[in-house]
Amino acid sequence: MFGFLNRGSSVATEEVFARLQRRVPHLLSEATGETRVSRLPLDSMDVVELLCATEDEFGVGLTTAEFMRARTVNDLLRTIARRATKAGHALR
Image (cartoon, rainbow, N blue to C red):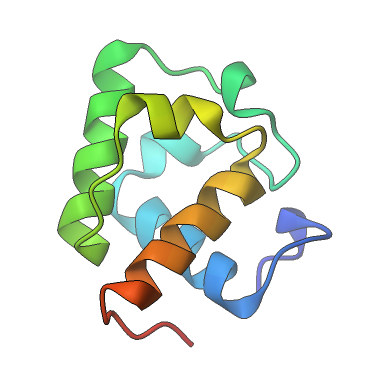
């Protein structure tokens, strides 16, 4: 699907990325799976927008601390996919 997510990605993480990219394309346009979350060009309002999109799209509420704890974009996507699955949201 999105080869740029690189190693460590799964169909579920690729689906999470695709769905978030549709909702907030301007926030993830330069991201790859190996991009460090701390290197994403996001200000505090962008982080809030991304967290809100995650909650709206997957029913998963992440805190800013949880977001910042993710080392890479793949780590963040895996966290969202895992939490969405636990919450009963079907991912491929």
